[in-house]
Length: 347
Image 1 (spheres, helix red, strand yellow):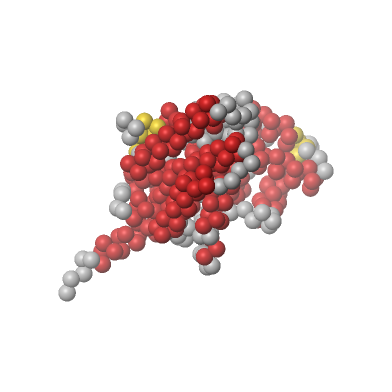
Image 2 (tube, helix red, strand yellow; image 1 turned 135 degrees about the vertical axis):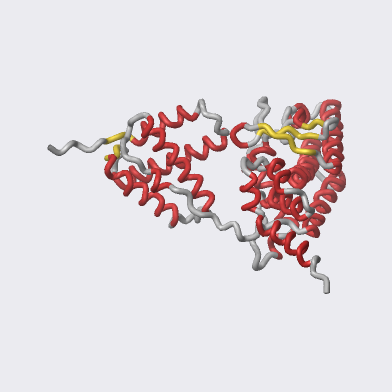
């Protein structure tokens, strides 16, 4: 006697899994990315089957079709992005197996793709870093020489320029992820212990040592914000009080009455704009363009190039495994060893 195939509702499964993740230690960003992938997967099923009900014996073919669609997607997903989506689906179907919603195992269909770690990461060269910092210093210094329609416009521009200058300093001297930088609070800086407290992936806490130049930049930024706040209050200007009262280093000024940090997308736009105005990417004809994440690569590369041990760099970056740092920056480590070894040659 032939048994009827097991049928499940993909939308219902997605909802149950996302509710399950609410008690998990995953970061909000990871949960959001999982939700995007699960929605993509559901939409793919509905568009191709005309229903959100799935027969279990068709699941493997559906997964293969979805992964093939990602490969040909016009957004041209990178290998890491595709692996992140594979991880989301792996978690979904592992949960479905544990809850006995499905019996078939599909984990072998979702193995991570191998990432090519032999290519050098695009980083800012030292003269490019100088170019960026010089531009930001000039802009922060010349704000008062420009003409504005209102005092509010002038002081907002003053704020944006001193904020952007410190934002770049923070990335270059800490190697933070954008998601981490967005959530940094004033109280996270401890100048006495020279440590910055960071809440990273999986809500794990780590401490990043503060370089003396970053501490000086922090002091300048805080002093400028305090002065700006006093001026705004004394002149009774109609400006968002989050500018000088926020607990965050980089508050969003778009929501009146709410103390929220800048979004990661907004920070990325700020960095992309700075890179565009310096013309750095325009000179990279045959090289990979600099992206906001390149600032993290720049930080790690210069640390390793200076001889800092991989273990220490791994801890500062917040990598769970030293092997992650080693794999990502193997070309830098090999280059350092190559130069060390060639010096041993003595005829």
